[in-house]
Length: 337
Image 1: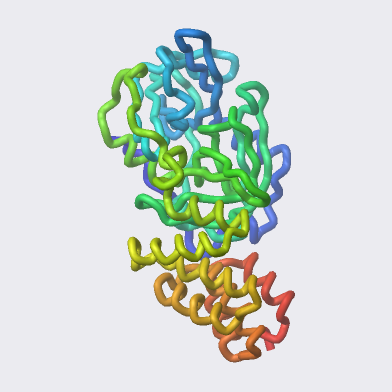
Image 2: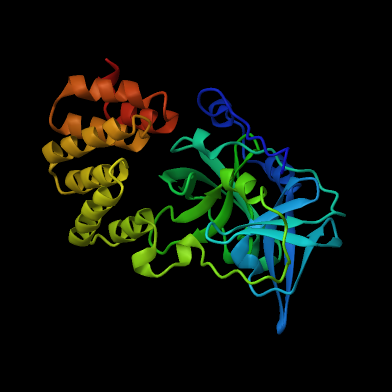
């Protein structure tokens, strides 16, 4: 059991962005202190990746970084340390390494469920396994999946950074960098930190033990999570296929707000604000904390000239996302009157 894996619970909205904490050189130096390089020896060579120190002698990384390896080493401050055991949650793509001799400060974790859409985040890892690469971005979407919130954002990272860290403005780890989907815009995805603690609850195993399960994001197209399939269809503007997928999604997951929200997005993009209103209302009824759905409800209400509903939606949106509510207030100043 990893006793130090208690997630940091914060009150209200995030602190760092509100206070204007910069993502400057001091920030990147601070967060890099808990980031390590992973060296994986294979029968025909070796590969490099990234990991994050989450407890004394414990490093989390993406399982796909380790697949096929026979030995794993962690490089920190110019010193190579051998990993002695590995715990895997292969479908979630989260692996925990036991590195007893590693002396590196663990990062502070913050629950992904505390994140807000629009919040500033920073991604850091080893680009192509070589030098440290970091990028500032923002949370674009939060996808409820497998007892966690997969983070979709615009903080860019390369394949070598897989297993690296996604940090908030207060330098707390909120996600583990996993994969990128094709398409324009914010297409970078990170696993929730909540998955780390679950992975650490099981006994460690052999480093070279085969991981038979595929990561959730690398399944056959028809077995991908609904949010990934919908994201791809939305990016490619395949509206009819997307609408069919949303209908099936709603049948399979009747409590999910996402099918209704995305149906509203289709309506608003096609100038059908009255129909979008119905979908957005359904989405917020299922998930009152869905900031993007409240934002959509506000926009659709303004297009149908229902200022009362728009002001109500703004009141619900404001405590959920400072960025989105400020954006809506700039676009529709009437909601503040």
